[in-house]
Image (cartoon, rainbow, N blue to C red; front, side, top):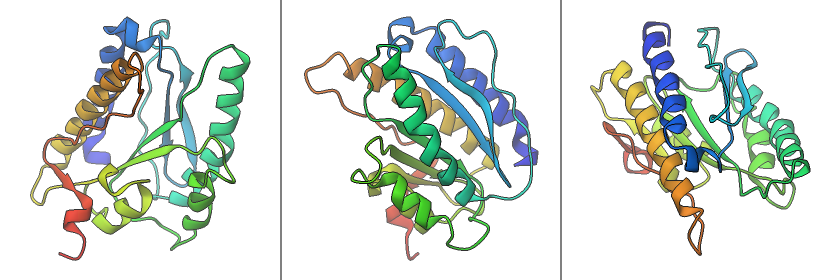
Length: 207
């Protein structure tokens, strides 16, 4: 991701600012940003973007250790949900927006914590996972990571990776705003927008 650090940084800033200009939506959402490589590092702890004054800082580091991500989320999500409930909030099912530019290092070791994370019988706070792959990330892997086939996307062949990263953040912001609006309805639901220059990963599997 090193050549695209500026796009990552700009995308995160755009996301945070996009929520700040939607205070009614931001009031219902709490955002955390994690960076992963050899391990997971917190770029932004669970935050209310109406009052958060700092912005996530991007750092380009080592490999793409998916196992570290799902091990981290197995403890982080239940803890964050418990804290939010303790603060008096009603918590809907968490959502993870997962962006990777490569295949998982370490083989299939990530599948065990991932399976536990998304199993509602073992993890009551199991999140919905939207997976977006750019660069060397393969369509089948994004399908395997996402909790539904329609939540998995890959950048179209020939798409500039920097542009794809920017589109990921545009779609993420739009999804959060639309989902926030949906919380006011009789049937709250997660709204997922496909990023421009991305295709459904399931349509690319086997090609």
